[in-house]
Length: 274
Ligand SMILES: NC(=O)c1ccc[n+]([C@@H]2O[C@H](COP(=O)([O-])OP(=O)(O)OC[C@H]3O[C@@H](n4cnc5c(N)ncnc54)[C@H](OP(=O)(O)O)[C@@H]3O)[C@@H](O)[C@H]2O)c1
Image (cartoon, rainbow, N blue to C red; front, side, top):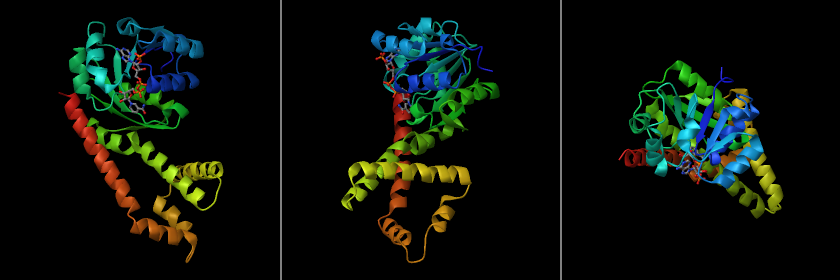
């Protein structure tokens, strides 16, 4: 489905190049069918050396002949970069934006085309192919465009299709989520160190514990509360720790963090929409 397509990535930075890596590892297209664009020639030379992709400092040249255009510049420069593509973009090209807080409607207006636009919100673990990406269709995008986006982001993890109105909540949950878990792991490491474990040992055990718990939730299909009950022995360590976590409000804090991050995403979207 994708192997005959040419994909241009405008803004091949952290997320853009993580995606290029995923696409190539999954062999969705050959390296010659990837056009990577950014301003730094040194960084582009590294991308070419690493993956053999075609590189461009001129965005319009990068999208010439591409079937799919992935926009991955920072939201702050999005308006200028996307407007700059308007003379070159074709209505037949599928545009996929990873840019946080920018609606498909804004992108269509900046590009001045009525072609298909899909919005995606990947999360940080995409570089290790363990991302969780939500994709939403804008006006002009249909099932087949969403299917292409699902295939592309499927190369770096799991994909969920959501309505565009849910994108701020996705940003608050999975888009920002790795930060919550990094803090959780950091605190678990400190807890282990406080109780006498060497830091390297505590770090290894804490990260593996989080990984294993997440894997169990995903693979068992059981609700996390059931899994928790299954390992909570009467009078044991787990129930005592649970009591402590409940009395300090762990769950409320996490819910509040997601609500606050979602609200901030909504605010930023309004600012970016001008
Ligand atoms: N990182 C994440 O975890 C994450 C998660 C969800 C969504 N996103 C979204 O992904 C997008 C990229 O984020 P990132 O973290 O990958 O940022 P990043 O590493 O800074 O990548 C952006 C790239 O854009 C390039 N760029 C800047 N101006 C340009 C221009 N005029 N023309 C072409 N390229 C240009 C920059 O390279 P040069 O300086 O060489 O031009 C840079 O490498 C953002 O919109 C962000 O909202 C990121």
